[in-house]
Amino acid sequence: MRRTWTWMLVSLVAVLAVGCGAIGQSAGREQAAKSSGRDRAHPLVFQNLTGAMNEGQDPRWDPRPASSGLYGAVTVWTASGRQEVLTADRQPLLFAAYWCPHCQRTLQLLTSIRHRLKRMPVIVNVGYPAGTSLQTAVRIAREEDAALHLAPFEEVFILTPSAGDRYAPLGYPTLVFRQGNALWSLYGEHRAEIWIRALS
Image (cartoon, rainbow, N blue to C red; front, top):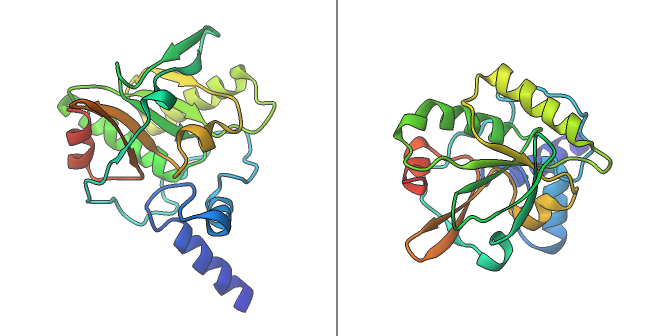
């Protein structure tokens, strides 16, 4: 019983930032990532998880500076198998994992407010285990789009398992966008007005 309560407390701390992924530093960061799903093997099927881990939407405008060196040349695959290089300087990039409930709800929210957005993000699908084929990743994305009734966002894929650690170090979803003369990243599940502000 005590072990169950300890596990529940660790899980709560891991998702305190209202997103899937790591928080904190060093050993705490590793534990948070494991309890929230980043380092766990996930079945290669779409699962509607919109009812899971629902702590509500973050009302804060809290973007962090992002590195143009990191997000200036993001190599991705299109669904048709073409390799492309994207830059967050030109178009916002939203890093999302197919197994992340926060990502699924965020994509539903962005679909519902898309007419209020001045810029549409490119959805960069990440979070796949080693050996995942592009065909499998595309199938999961199509199943997610249909089941959640998502808008036809431009979607691309990074199949490298370490992509999440590289491009979304705090977790999912992570939006990288240009505002003014700087690049910013926004992590976690936020309210509509925050996404509208970031994508205006």
